[in-house]
Image 1: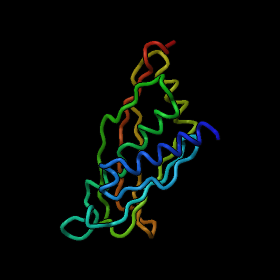
Image 2: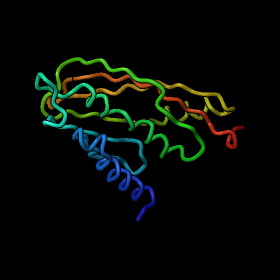
Image 3: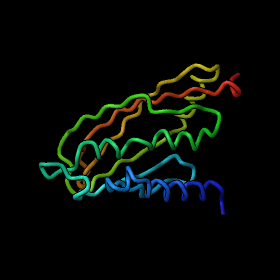
Image 4: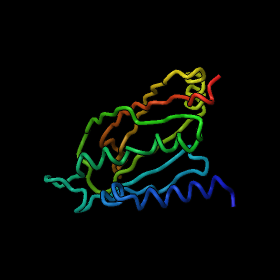
Length: 156
């Protein structure tokens, strides 16, 4: 079995039983073997419903929380410090039924990280995630700033 496949498979199992996501009914449906693409969903339930019958805003926000950081950690290995620095969410319309979010790490993103952190500088890239309903309409837009810095022992 391919090592990357087993790692992605284990990551998917772990994240799907992790209590903060599990109890909000957030599910990592797919993750590529190379940790470059992920597809996450959440169904409206009594565990994540707000007072007006739509998905609680905090659950929508949580749906996007760990994925870019953890995917980059898996890609960049032990050479980098990677954290979520800040984030904000713009609620566009109520989320009802099933909502989804996709995460993509591009070659350009990886190249930018390497370039901006080569000498130990911190890099604060911004990533945007759109949460969509079953009709493909945007329910919320999440802007996330990551903190990335190459560890001292790996700097040029």
